[in-house]
Length: 350
Length: 234
Image (cartoon, rainbow over all chains, first blue to last red; front, side, top):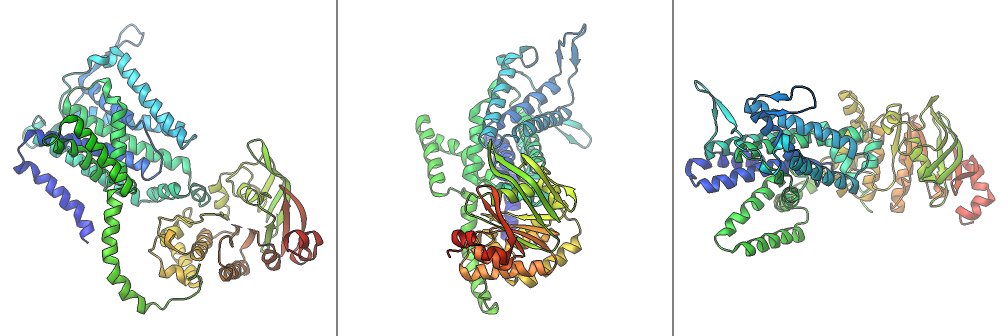
């Protein structure tokens, strides 16, 4: 019962936080951590539930960010015809959805291509994909402005009765929006993992040949997982770009993917809460350390914490805590059950 | 019911199985025996669609099934219980059984079949919500067989059901396989334990280095001097 209530208590706590926490800097850190947690959750769907490591996950994040930015700013593009193709600025939410859609389409493409070659090859394909995207963003100056970056990206809006769509300029409001999208993403992944599709994904991760022999269409489910995962990473990218309101090719940097992977692995891959816990820890750790340690020392501590977690809790934090709890609970229940169920000896040995 | 005609299966360029022909009639229990690396498992994997054929034909109930995706083979009523790790260790016993019925959509039928399986394997019902990986080796084997039966197959392929089990469990496993066959499910079984395999089967094939070298009824094979010398320690 408590285990079920816990996520909602956490959400409620996070939701009332801006009521008493007015430190803008903390809110800023929480918001960007939240965006990364959404991206980490999307990575977890692939890494944790299908066992495929996407080391180019930031590509989907960046595609979402760039698409959403371009659609909301509008652009013109010389396609070689007489008239350049001109797109007027679109409402931000349309742009945001466009970003999700574009990321999902690329997810589908990568899924179709990469799952013919799984394991190490998938890792290489995804890394290359992210690098190619970075090069495109850097060099297609007509569209992306290259290293000059896209500026003045409008913030996301919210519909308010009587006032229509109001832009979200305040940190508190954007924080709440990110929290809402985060909860929605969590629910989507939760539903997906509990469904027939999720069962198939887990079966696949555990024993692919067996999964195929019980009739699971391996490629199809892997592609579904990649599409959902890419779309969600695209949503995180959209949130990010409308929040900091500038986007440049550095968004495709490898370090962002690594950050997501660290969040997933330390939190506990293949668990729903894992990326949230890992994300909060590693999103917040540098900020907590800021007061007590110099920057170089901060990164050393950051690395040390990571190594300690991987070393002592190889499954991640969430499974370790879960095990601790179930061990405590199990003992009395186990004792109560033993006398009522006389052990049938068949199959008991070995 | 199942017919293999001159099949060849290769890993890369190296053929692991060459020109194997065999036949399993409706309701029969047929075994494939042979040493490690003889091509027994490869043959089963080719039948169930997990490996492509380099040459030859496979027909199941008069339909060609060579190079057919595993799910389509299963949909025709041919279930495969692979060797090695045979269960999904992190899924519960119930979820494992449900995976066996993955291609079925008749909820009531699935529930009924699950009840039937619990009658036969009471241990599984006791451990319904336990992760399959925490079961003993024998229980996992029971679960694997039960899962294969959940697809309501007309025929099952069993790959080394006795592998890694304690002797008393091996016996129990073979009893269950005999029961399954008595209920009308055709069985093709790979088994290294040649004596047990020959005693319980209708007919058997001996594979050596990827080819069928002997065939016959269980009794004939038990009396075959080559088999006695090489496989029965006599």
